[in-house]
Length: 150
Image 1 (cartoon, rainbow, N blue to C red):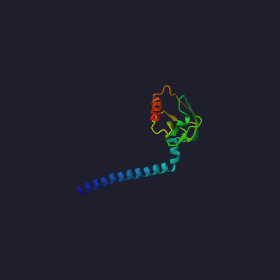
Image 2: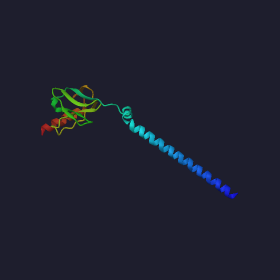
Image 3: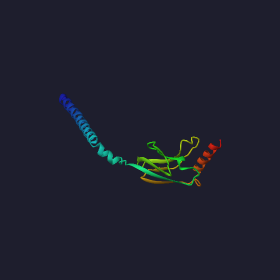
Image 4: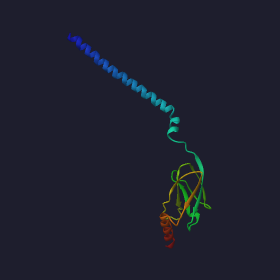
């Protein structure tokens, strides 16, 4: 009788390990299936997660009451590092809609520091710089004046 009990205990142990093996195989096949479906439909899935980026040519109008000519300023796409100088208060920049754009001082004025607002790119933009009220701009202009005094 002892042998039968020992034999039946081994069958139960084998059944439990068999169930574990079936579960392991089932989970492995399920992971393989989901990974292959994700791979095949990755372009469609990424379209839901990340919006399409639309390439545009942004027309930026600079309005300023500063004592500097408009060629003293430039517009920089902070995402692509493209830079365009203003010509007759307008600049045209090829960018992506929604990229971050910032007015900066022309590098010709290397001793001048500036920190202007960041704007989201659209097809037509109008950016105003008010030298009378902006402390940052006043600091920039003072820095520029001090550069030319030396």
